[in-house]
Image (cartoon, rainbow, N blue to C red; front, side, top):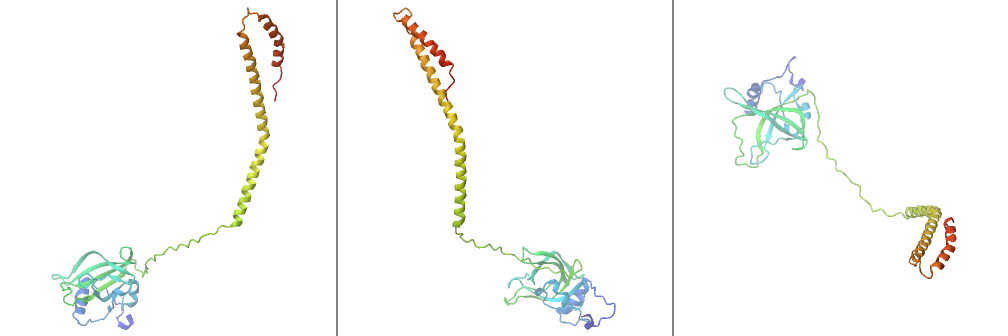
Length: 274
């Protein structure tokens, strides 16, 4: 590009804001010739900022363009800032250019990759210069979306490199369809067999313990029988206490008690029955 312009050696293009408005923007809008056609004419809002350096006629770290500007709504004066895969968002206050009379307005914008409200801020900056004191009302022709025929734009990256940013793709989560699983008869049979084996083991263990339980129960029954025999003897003693010692049967009772006392002593020394 620089070879086609036939620029002299050591040429550098670093115009000030006043020079850009007075010598380039005003002449372009008035259809006047520019001494050196160093600024390209493109529709800047159709491209991403990292695509613009290849379209510029000159520039190493900053690039200049003449671009038209459209309305966002047919009846409004707001510009359409959508561009490429994202949008340009204004930042800071507008700066008037020109003294004592304001000839242009400078606006700073930042490029966001993606959709509005969810876009990712990038390092791409644009300084947009537009003419001041221009009637931009929609007028009678409501179908005309053109807001400005020409604005002058300076594009650069804060890090001095050509960074590319692509919008994040929203990955749709796909869930596999849940199929109705049929019961596996083989597994059910195996589980049933394992459960039956466990029950057999439990029965066997219960059988091993049953002998000790029977032994304990026999001991308990034997002690109960012994207790019943003791209650009988105590009842007999209780009945004999009601017999009058002076009665006619006193001597006979004493004789019988004397005969029973050895037997009672014998039962006391017997071991308990199991």
